[in-house]
Image (cartoon, rainbow, N blue to C red; front, side):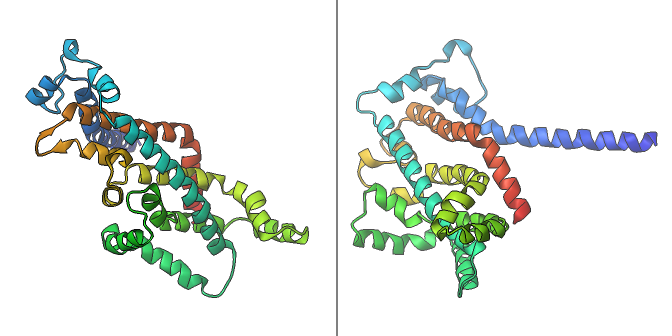
Length: 282
């Protein structure tokens, strides 16, 4: 008995040690980045991203620099990213939840084929879609516009799949009762079923928001004007063959993490609840 308890305690301690090591390994690059963002340029060139800390030399000038430097477009890029992310999340939630709901609760001809098409779309890498999507954006004159960044991915296959799984187990009796009372299908969706899908919507807000905020390849292809760049594109433009602006790049990278972090902190309960319920129901 004593031996089995000892083995169990050793097993628990081993799991905790393993998780601590994994956590430290995962967070180490972020810790180096945050420390480097407070170092002056000469320290960055001398030591790079290292754990070498001289508190007397740490400074906030890099952060002041990215917002106050003459000609800096960091603030413009930051608000461009926020604008595109907010619009993308709202549009994608609206259309993806409706498509997922329809696939989850209605029975109609071709439903299975449509669902398989959604699954197939999820498997396609974006690199295969770039050329046809680019030609489409040229045809509709959406190159170098926010619409060109947002519209091609306004309906997310991942979100459709998630909402479909979630909606498929919602109580159908509520729909039948509402129909008997004379509710239209749109009213049933917006006033009865959508409130039941709030945990799923909360989870998708974070996932879609992160996806849009960190998006790089498609905005890089569509956007041409520097004043229309998103934050990832603008920061990458600081690395040039004629010189690299590491102070702005590193401090800007740390600032770019904050919106996603704030979004998760204020929405983590809905995020965890949505993923848990979605996993159980799926």
